[in-house]
Length: 361
Image (cartoon, rainbow, N blue to C red):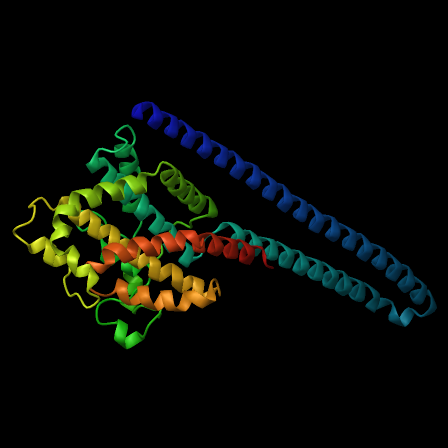
């Protein structure tokens, strides 16, 4: 029954992906057609202007001929004046045409090519896709597609210069740098919310030569939504919690104490617990990735004045938590914060804000 349901889910996800791709192609065709219409309008406008200039030149020629008949002393200047006027008209037409084409090109790039910040968000989505599918492969979830998807998103990350692997999975330190969190020791010097990194960090986190497009971002977002529709994230999280429950229970009582200093690292060093800590490590990575993302998204929401009564406080909270030690409190707080983020549709509001900005002249 589960296999049939999984096959049905996969089929539905595939149909959704195909429908999404068809919509994207229709949209791209429509935009290309609109650009061609704009270029044709520019061409027609230039043609009409050149015709008007030709008519004006013809009138000037007739006028100069009349004047030449009246006064032979001015005849030697007529051709020079006519030539200069023609050159000026052509130069003006070329300048206006170049400006029109430049405006079209700028609008096209603003609409279709991602900014550096959007490229960083794209990479983080790839990180999530790779992490979920690689852990799903470990847990034996969706065995028909988990391995292939993990390999696919892993190969994409290998071509990207910002995020590497620490030998056991995604490098959290690279993800922190990707989302412009300061390195250890830099936070106090640069202040909360600073998005600048030093020259060396910029060089290490330089933009890839390839320019990523809106299609890449939509593809990653569609893949993530398909993953969520399959409830893969919930199933992965549930199994990680179940497999680490035996390690968390001995200190769960400390969650009632707001001043608890027990950290998840202490759990890893407790010899009385299960010695197989693979899944505990994956669970810690899940918490770390979500803490980083919460601080980053709430920071963007604060800049865009989205949920202003919450954004600044949430940004400061998760900015500090993302750079602090992992504690047992994070086990509950991160889950609740992620649910709040989804309930308020913060990411969707940021997407709408991006779409409006790209349409502005």
